Length: 471
Image 1 (spheres, rainbow, N blue to C red):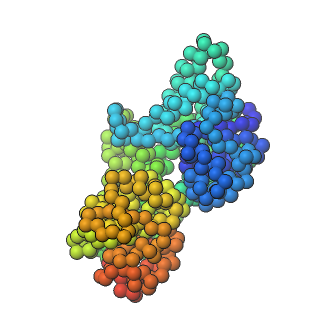
Image 2 (cartoon, rainbow, N blue to C red):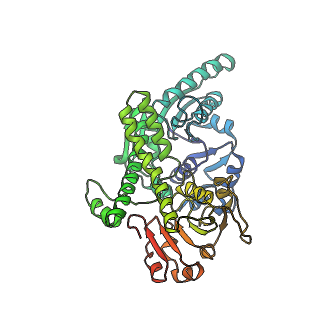
Image 3 (cartoon, rainbow, N blue to C red):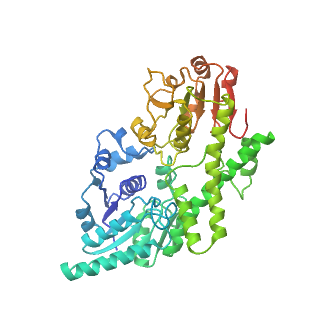
């Protein structure tokens, strides 16, 4: 089946960049990205490319090349489903808040809604591609919805549409998503129909080597996505657990990770210590994995993966306790500059960012936070810190509050401490002399990200604590 028209339901962090790269590599295919969120669609269509809803290095240039030619963003869901040969489902699958599996299982409400819309509007043979991160055997759910809805429509409307369902999970790292899409480690396609698999495979062969394309059954593909994220998160929790031991024993975490990362069986990827992992996937996918293990009676396996999450939460609370101790056991009315609010560098995504919980707890203890991030806008920070007072920079506050600064040096004026929470490159080249003059003595710098020129801060009288090395 030759694919001429693609529709992607969902214009978020996965759907937008993925479809942009497909459009860029396959100029003979019309790619339509649809979403019910009107504001998000308007931002994707903004003439000012700096206002795209997602920041990823290289994304704006691709959108500029393709938008209006073979890449389109709209709310026209019915029209684009009808015209599509292939439909990617790239909607949100948050963790359930209520009901059976609350707090662990994925909420498939948006998946079900998308499947019903496809069944309703599709009028020919259509290949459905799962792009969202989903629990194992979700494809069965989609097929049942498609079949049931189609049968009802056949009776009333004479609908003759047929479907194949594929699993094609994304393996993108935010901050390098465009590079990951342009030069992927692997492309995973799971399905039952060889014809459908080959149709999707032909799209990727426009720029991906055949040796990088792996085909499996549906269930292996769905589980592989959860397993990949679980393994990556496990590495983060492992190195963070060792960072605490290094501080107590006098070892240096940077030296330890260099030694173990040099072992080719281990490798050095995802061995960077930090305040904990964040993003939309790791926590959600491990919780989903835990729920599946419990569902199938594998309690020991579920407990094993829960420990990865427990270490992640413990790391954040551990850092907070150290900050309290170093600042004489109280942070009430103390000015603390926060360097970085996104969960990692080179993205404006704050979902599950360790900064959120750390900032909330600092405010609860009475700290006055001065937050700087080069890509996260103040309205997003306000949303993440909803319920926590936003102070006026010209006023004195006796209780905890926060404010946003668009200049890193301005945020350090009269600061008692600085906490580096995101590994933005610009933090590697700061003028510590100027910062030392801005700060109130005795001043402290808490580095959770191994910032490169951090030792210079000591030269100018700033007390220094580094994760995995101590004071």
